[in-house]
Length: 115
Image 1: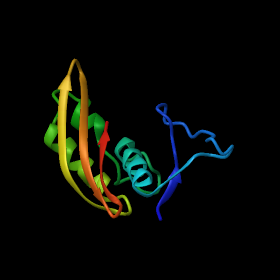
Image 2: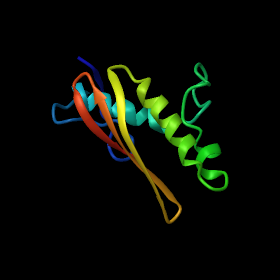
Image 3: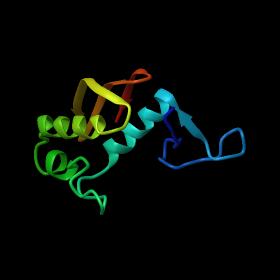
Image 4: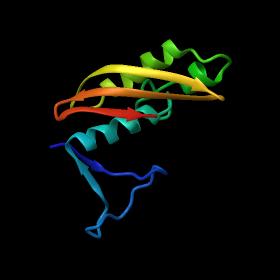
């Protein structure tokens, strides 16, 4: 079963009710891993500089290139272990904020990722 450290709304790990670092399993763990993959900037990882989402080039450099952002987002999510596919991505921009909802199919079922 997939396991990962859980993060809070500030993207920080935290101590859970058991008194230990909180750990997610199954679908929740895969969705947490997808969220981390979606937050990774292109070239941010020194050992995998070709992975990540090019937010500056696709989103913040002039008018957002929504198609390019979606393609990189799908690629990042589909690279997460136990992800079978991304069924749908809905992207919106309002008041200078780009947000998305992705429907992700995993070996544990389907879940949604909001970013």
